[in-house]
Length: 80
Image (cartoon, rainbow, N blue to C red; front, side, top):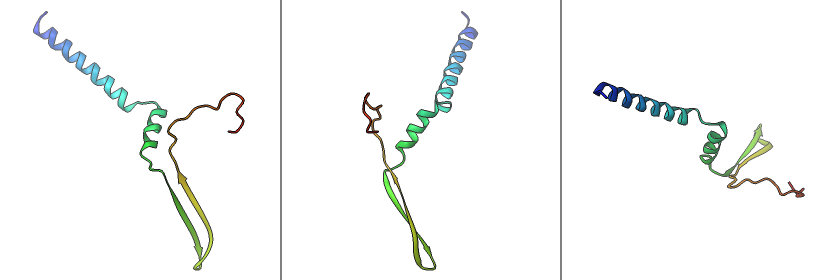
């Protein structure tokens, strides 16, 4: 094999592995991206108060939690 053949083979392997890396990092499944995004949201609660004319007329709250493990309910379990 000549030096040119080796150079083309090495550059071809490098380009193929770079393409594989781009595909793996930028075209991930939606479930994987959502799971990673969920880890960056801290658990907590936020409370809102609605005032009209200096008087409270309503309120709302928003709570976020993390589920560490999700499993389907056992057969016959109707509590869910």
